[in-house]
Amino acid sequence: SQVYISKFRKLFIISHNEHVMKRLESSFFYNPEYARDFKSEEYEKYIQYQLKRFDLKKTHTRAQEYYQEVSQHILKHLGTIQKEAFMVCLGARNNWEKRQFNIFLNSAKREIRIHSLDIGKQRRNSRKDKDITEQCDYIMDFNNMPEEWANKWDITFSNSIDHAISATETFREWLRITKPGGLLIIGFFDVWKGSSNQHDCAIFEKENIDSFFKKNEEYTVLDSFQVGNYYHKILRKNT
Image (cartoon, rainbow, N blue to C red; front, side, top):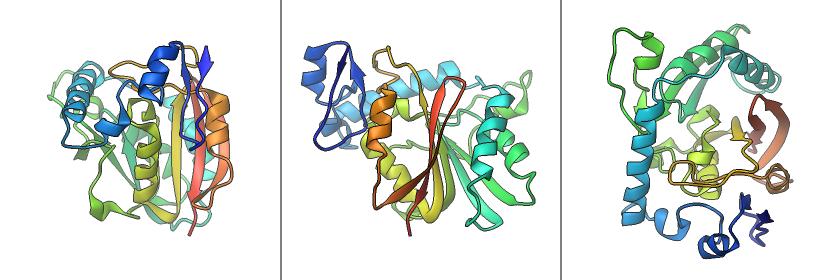
């Protein structure tokens, strides 16, 4: 496989097709030069694929043990965050993720008000658990969030960056909405030998993730850890 190294230190990754890699210049399925124009046909195509994917996975959940272990890592780094804090889960699908973090993060004499966000709406099915059929608090594209959300959240969490239209630019968007002194937690799905497609727009090489998150004036890397199929980074946004 080929690893694309960029002098701009973008957040990528791996490609098995050198022609595609050169054509996209980022190993992402969509060309970020056009897709980040939120009025472009390329972006509209991306949104339609993501909505279709959401409909297929909207009631899927991850194991409770995953959230318990991730929460244990988060709790180690809450020292400078106020006891009453606000957290957003990006790409949450439904409210199962929100519920799990409520269980494990708020057991430490803290009141973290947790919110969920995803691109699509739920169609309520009374036969299923409320938490997996109740739609997220915010319905929007996590690549492009409101301007007034700058420095809004004490804790920003996502393990869906593989769905980002441009992982590097979307990471910067997530950092933008995180408060100075707040935490940004990103989980990277470890499909090191996979390939990008319309739904999973980016795949990541662990070595390149570590290289990307080297010393930076905007944030400090507090923790790196693996839980299940996800490799995580916890960052503190510098003040």
